[in-house]
Length: 88
Image 1 (tube, rainbow, N blue to C red):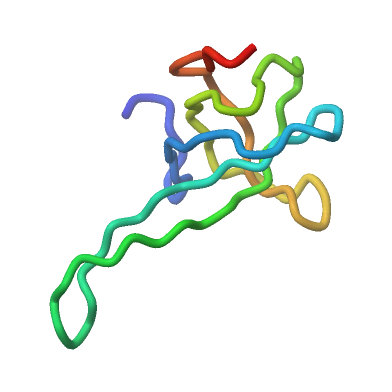
Image 2: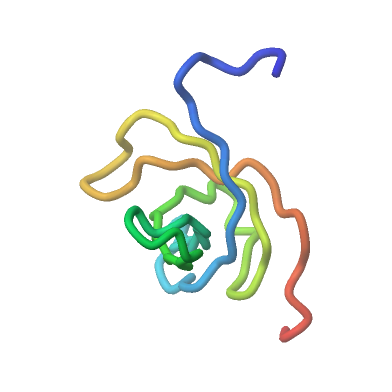
């Protein structure tokens, strides 16, 4: 990707919490094979992301990018909203 810094991950997930201003909790679904048995396991990882314009709501599908630490838990920045939630 042009303009992307090396080592910065970009992932897509769903906003699960939007209580605080400019802060969103985004859940990422990971589907990985079990180390021993090989069966596919679904894991959910939650990231705290910074939403500068307060645009996203709970249920939105968003793309987030890794960034420098913004607070104790915030290490991600919301780059775009891929799909708006219909529960508004």
